[in-house]
Length: 441
Image (cartoon, rainbow, N blue to C red; front, side, top):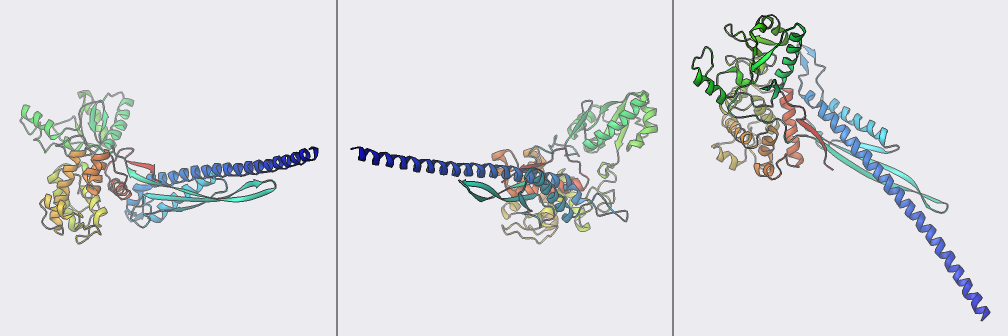
């Protein structure tokens, strides 16, 4: 019996030793697995940060793609070529990986890098992590992960404040009065200078819609003092009626330094902002060649299409810069363009949408531009936002209504961002936050 007991005890000891070895090996495997998970988590975080950094660089540089390469015969330092634009984004990603990724190797690419204004960036990271595989054994685990980010139009950006006015962009408010954001910034400088000289400036009127102008004209139907509805410069968001009367003399001497001009000799209180060409009086708006400072049509528009864009913008009360940027993005001003999906002509109308807007022939350039402006007017009224209206033009109104946002379609988000960038490059005032950065993968 004692011999049997000794044999059984030996077997138990052997089983216990085997179990200990297995437990130790399992612990080593678990430790290696845990270390690999931690390593991958760190790599994913570095990839996310790098993609966001590259996209932020693209957002900040986006408008520079549309700056003129040459100004007055000299190279324009504000202009960026597409190659430089992408190089700056790649450098931002690489620097972020170096700061956060340790020994990670990163590959930065741009899925839409061949387009005229790329908005997407992809970062792929790889590393071989040394881990303990067991007692006295080590192995290297391959870690690969990545992230993708994009520059997109913010859903709520560029709100349309109301119908029936010449200005269709965002408002800034000073003393409770609405005006264009660039006018507000110029007024801040004007007011600061006045205050330094002991002069107080009060704003009695700024932007006025055509409906407000109609009410004023009904009360005072004298065109010398109150412009007819649709003819007041206040509808442009550039005009300020300033007071009190004790400030008139100071304004007459100093307003021009801040790009404000006294519009009418008989109105010492009415000053208009003139730095932006789109703020010129009605008598010169739409006159001249694109980009000459007198036309509301941006300089990148071929001269043959400028009159049609100017007429459509005026008829449907839509920004000429917006229409021009759309045509550039849609077809690069090619009146014979046909997309793989069947969209046709310079404004890329699908046959059903063309019929709905009375466009018998999408290849009729003048008719297509008019129908485009009509459709954009309707979408702006429906969604109250340039970004959402553009998204609806590209992806359909139903897709925008379902999420009340720019839908998460890469093509649509890129389309909105490109057009907002083109409008900014053409001098259109966009609000802070019109372009945002987001991770998409």
